[in-house]
Length: 225
Image (cartoon, rainbow, N blue to C red; front, top):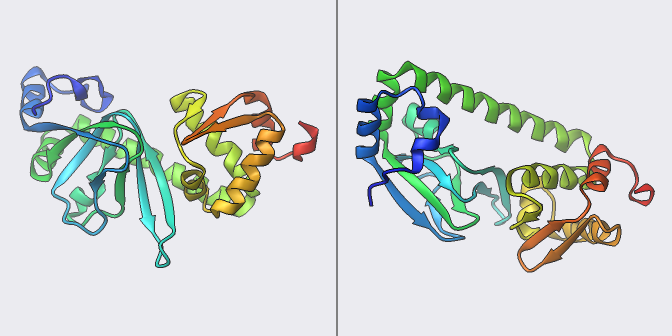
């Protein structure tokens, strides 16, 4: 199905003329993905660039023992596969829908022509990549400096800023995002529940006290909150 509206709201394409916008929409195909559907597979030829227009998508890699490491969570107007397209290399990670998601697909050749002919889009593409690189650096710093309780608290704060107080992720997925085991994540989230910071339902974590969660992200002992 051709998309007529989805990516019009994306700041990335705000510099396009009406003619260029019409061209973009003519080469963009909209697809719906259910939770758990694979959007792009690590190692596959990068045939498309993807733009998330609704929902949440995880960029993930799997270790040799099958453990999942979630590198980033993508939402409205985030792009997937643009680095692989520019470098003409396979996809660097697997993109999987975390929620029901709407994604626009643009053929790699059309995307490359778009950035060659529109410096504004090229500039915004690299600004967005720079922000994601900085986010990755911060994540590495947290792995080195923060206790797992802090990492989980910071992640929940970040996710709630994008999604609200109800975060539709399992504790297995939370473990994958902070680079720890499911057992450790269960132990930490149980302590958070005892402190009345969160509550959990099937497939969801619900933040009940953002102030306490902020204190935990700063690193004080749980007992003082």
